[in-house]
Amino acid sequence: VYSSLTVSVRPSAQARIDGSLAYQGYWRRTDGSLVGRDVIPQVTLEYQLTRSIFFRILGQYHASETADLRDETWTFYPLLIGNTLAAATRARTYNGQYLFSYQPNPGTAIFLGYGHEAAGNPDPTARFTWEPLQPMSDYFFVKWTYLFRM
Image 1: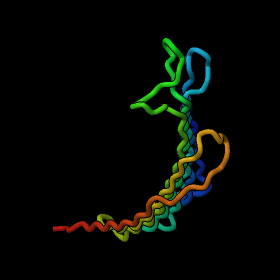
Image 2 (image 1 turned 45 degrees about the horizontal axis):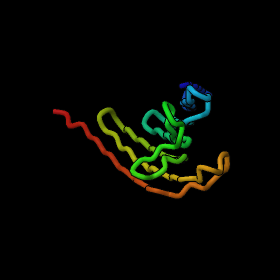
Image 3 (image 1 turned 90 degrees about the vertical axis):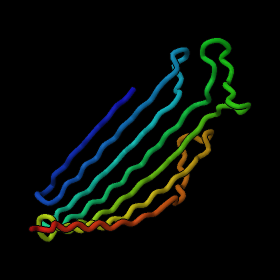
Image 4 (image 1 turned 180 degrees about the horizontal axis):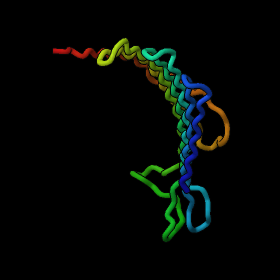
């Protein structure tokens, strides 16, 4: 099953809010049990302060989980990969991005951005419980463009 939902709101001429939710789930044919799923909600807030000044904030959360893998064709026993049981997994990540843009005239633009990423590897046996995410990386970028006219 793959489902996607998108919502766009324009409360004013300067503000935009976009949200999306993607869901993918797959089940075993033999007994209908859940094999895995991914859920990805994302929200983007944009604001055009003036013609030349623009702000954007983006947040995305990704939750994925898989069940124990097993042989569905013959024995129905759990699978071993390299003498290791292919056990259930769960993972969570969050990505936040902040952007400031200044374009004083056509051809000249300055972009300042910051991003943050956090992740967690929750216990696969403790389903539907909240575990805190650990910061993974932070980044900052600057981009400056200038158009030379001849």
